[in-house]
Length: 162
Image 1 (tube, rainbow, N blue to C red):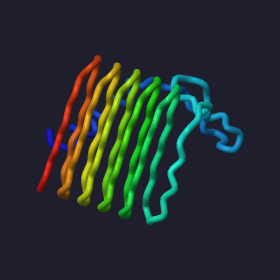
Image 2 (spheres, helix red, strand yellow):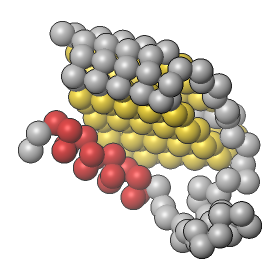
Image 3 (cartoon, rainbow, N blue to C red):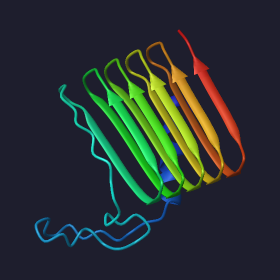
Image 4 (tube, rainbow, N blue to C red):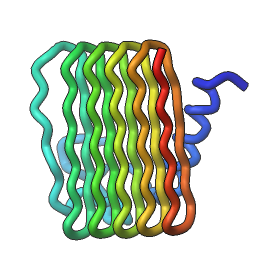
């Protein structure tokens, strides 16, 4: 199995683990598609301002004392952070173009860090548990990495240069 397929499977597994809410999209004007659940949008969220073409950043935080930090400079960037729990931190920095980064943290006291400088890179981190630490740094182009941690007190660091 190639790296992008492995990346997609890991990210899909992480997103499936965070729970699901039934969506109702018949009428998008009445907010019927926003239902209560583990990832309800009633909690405070962070908003990122982006100027270049083709950038998208989504941040959803639920809990207390969570911090998210997004920076995207090039074009066609996609970054996503979902944090549920308390005392979580997450950082994403992407500078090139055509990059994808995703962080999902559920639990307490988790820390994640993604930095991508080149172009056409993909990175994902999913942590379920407490006091986990993960870091991904990719400086070249066309690199892919994925981290999934279940449990508590685990550390992973991935560094790729090209």
